[in-house]
Length: 571
Ligand code: WT7
Image 1 (cartoon, rainbow, N blue to C red):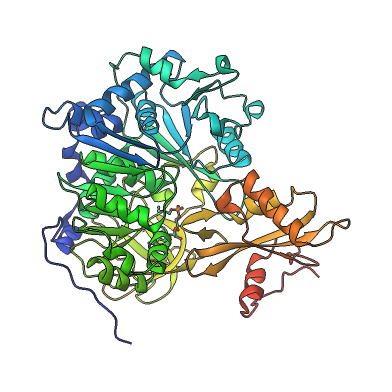
Image 2 (spheres, rainbow, N blue to C red; image 1 turned 90 degrees about the horizontal axis):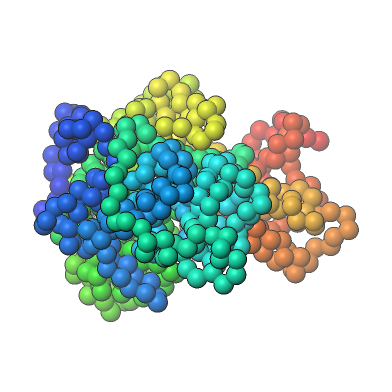
């Protein structure tokens, strides 16, 4: 089969000499762009906000273009810098110091960004939680991180199990509380009273900045710990991959509860002093196109699941909008289907550029940059300063075209520095100097990487990573459920959907209502994206002799595939 190649579009983009750069580049080259080069200390909040606020030409530039169904707001770099100073002062009043964990559990809003940077300014570690999380998900994360302060809204407060959180000293409420308001800190009131001057906490490159919880195939979600040093790579990829220029209007559709929404929804654009569109609420295809048109978005970073949704609504819809400002589109989170790229060329007259990375990697690693020909279906090539390879289970490199573990030579700037409270889990990622991703892939002769699948049981549904163990644990909390095994089942729009196999306790009978009740139980207890779309009742769940659920076997049955080795199956 002839490989499809989409050539580089002529234009003015960054990093034209990609292959030469890959040979000569060193991360030290990038350090000249940061202030710490002179002081030896650093703070992400300074580099992303205050630096621009101090610049008379940038201070009144719009940093945040906020848009939600019921609210619109523009915030300049100068304002955001001062507002985050106020929030840092509030935290200081309540005794927060460098290294403390401060969590945010709220929808995207200007307040979120003010608070987020206030946390960084005091040197604390920010923990953003996705607004759709339910009680169990919130409990797990706040307990594990021993968070001292939480910022949330009156609507979300009921999902915060305060009695189970002894370390949580204060809750700051954004919005109006009717009852018990004296138990909580009122964001608005305190912001009005706070000084907008704050002596920023200068930290070391290796000091903590961010905790993002993510799912594996076993156990509770893991706290992926990132440090200020990551800014070097956020800055570099903002230039090379996002191709950001001074006058860009940039839109990243991800929520800051996920790493894309922080690394590329906050850090990369603002390190470059670029105007950033933040869109709250749920979207229909018309909302997406309207947002692109209304703000004149030039650079757009989104996800395959969203793009597939747009594809399903047809090319004609695009024609109702003037999207002529758009010049660069990127995607992340799941495999980007070649058909979507082909559609993108028809619909937008632009290539869609796939990028590959993970919560643990902190920033993009394998990418399609504007200067590279696109081979649809490939994730692209590693960025300068990053060595990627395909290795076997012992960490030996494999030749081109051979499938194996996608691995990165450890030591890139934005690499996670710990799994919170779990050093052995952290160690388990590394073999023979390689960070092993858990993805399988191969590399072709020209150095392009091609994604094949996950090597573990982690499910990727609409670009969100779900651990089967979490869902199984929630399922068996339901009185009707005896045992549960959870898999990802391929789905054309969502990538995968969650399918649960369960056995029922003796006194329960299968019915539509019961299955729906169980589904709702997971949805309201854990989160909507973790709720199984399909539930199948079985007489037994296949397990190994040591009692492990054999998800692989469930999957083979579901997909009608050969069952492989079943020698460890319990009789
Ligand atoms: C997993 C990481 C950090 C981005 C958001 C997801 C899958 C990510 C791609 C891609 C195929 C991809 C991988 C990876 N993934 N990007 N371009 N092509 N698969 O972060 O939640 O930590 O998930 O998402 O399986 O391991 P995450």
